[in-house]
Length: 162
Image (cartoon, rainbow, N blue to C red):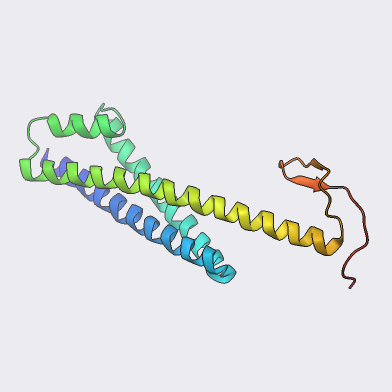
């Protein structure tokens, strides 16, 4: 049982480190969105993509670990494993702490990611409105495109010509 709990402990530590790194990246992204630093936003997005792929792989390994022992996935499986005899108390406490920290960080990541997504949508909307003004097609009447964004049909003269 010690070897199994050590394996789970290693997986949880790696998931915790990756989740913590993701939170840091989301915080950096938030700062760069406020600065409208496109180069950094793109770099961070690529790093987030790689990190999320790594996290998905680690979580799949954790789920396979629990499943192979006929345990539930997620919190219930971790708790069932901890309740089994043979898990050293100190290790059980550390596993519980790591699991709690992962859950807490995941909630924080979700919150910051939603805020960042809303900020990106706002910037996208602002950019579109500026383009509409420059093209002279700004009108309060319009239709909606396939993605739900408003399409303006007013065809007045352009403010700029190339």
